[in-house]
Length: 386
Image (tube, rainbow, N blue to C red):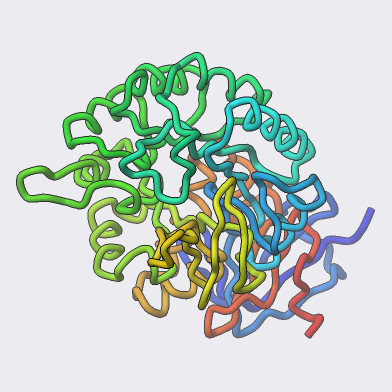
């Protein structure tokens, strides 16, 4: 068996806090160990941070590849792109499409989940509100009939992790109950729900807010809407896209303050252009133009179209949270690793640096830029290579 590796000298972020000059021991199985042989090779990471690998539960693609329409090799290309930016665990998200096509995609993605390449499937659409459709094809939207929701769950062969619903639509609350019964996260999103309707969905079993603030009514002093209902309920984890485009810093600060570090999950909502560049793309059936790293739908009249996902990678979200939003590193680690891992039932394997878990970790320099990524004990980005 290969000798164990020892990472030394870094500030290591553990569930109990940050250890200065800490050690992380990686065994021959690619897991974190409690001890190592005296002659185990050491990697000196003095002056760096070591944090758990990032967990992205809402991601549509990257590296020029789409999880919605690409081949197996395309999906793997997108996954690899995000791994190079620190995301060692990724849930592949679809967008609105024909129900039979979505079932077909679920079959392909479930195979990759069974192989351990992705951590499951998130269906974002078609069960969303035409009033808050964002970058989804309105012609393909439908009410969340529990039978249709069940069709997608079955097609995913046990790999469905989350379904985003406009729970105020006919069948919405019943679909939430169905998802809860099958151990699938019901997420409130792309919704025009009232405060009261959102509370009803939460009581039925909804536990996630899909990209809070985006694609839902704004807060009103007489009609507080879904945002307040989702923020105030201890049962709900709120997704936040921290790219500086989707959320004003004050909105992110408010969400973090009210939900707390234990109920927030940073996501990318990334599309093909993440880690790839500006240009013309497709998001499902819709044309998208990415300019200055912002993705928007192409419109017939040339006006500014709706934001269409993001080009974000989680390393940028991490860096922004610490350097711009001034959040404590330990809180950011919870939001970007531990919390999403817990949501998808993977916290016994990933999401924190503890003995027995996979050696999934990210090495950051003093400026919080990625210089190393390890997944299951193997360097994806070797901090010694450069």
